[in-house]
Image 1 (cartoon, helix red, strand yellow):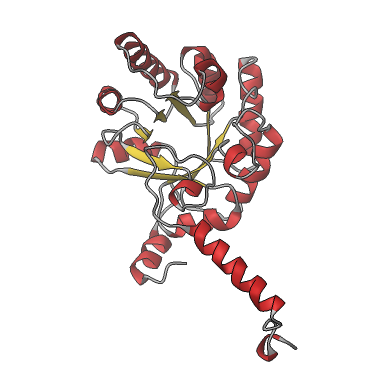
Image 2 (image 1 turned 135 degrees about the horizontal axis):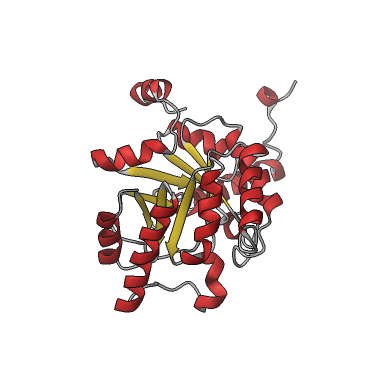
Length: 278
């Protein structure tokens, strides 16, 4: 836990975040802070830092499991990691990311898999990608009482259709379609909307258009909140770093140096010393 007493006190007094609270945060003009987490210690530390929302993203496929995209990630993967995060009992809202082919086949399939995130993994809400094509699934999931976060713009599960990870909605027609789909997702009952990889001007315009909050990732400063992949902001991800990422630490360098020091001490027989032996 943070060494700052003020942070500890605010954490102790902080009520559990629930989905309806985010609309109120938007009304107050209070920026929403979101990060990804895939395990117990990261969730605990992020929550101690006071984040509002923890997304157990299918990005775990690329930053934890070593896949080249999010497409191979399964429901079992997502439930396993979401369960680890919820065992940290964070005050932050925990959102489970529905993986590829867990909601696209039918609304019935989507409802059943969304239910598994809540029943089996303890998630507070789920996230899925797409607009008009997932509208019925969103409606049905919301009707069951499960909060839904939408996701438009650069939707990584559509990487094959996009031909790569490219900024979306640059043209006027695509911008109009994204705005229309954002309104539709709000009408279907989404409590918030991730906007990824779109022009900053569009991110701000869509945010003004909606009563639900937008959470940007590469969508400019005009969104109601921001989310980053924890491995990116901590300097742990070993792959390509997108333009929108700001690194707040260089933990990969520190970890590498620590492993090297440990290896040197073992090989020189400096570890373990008397104080580390029974």
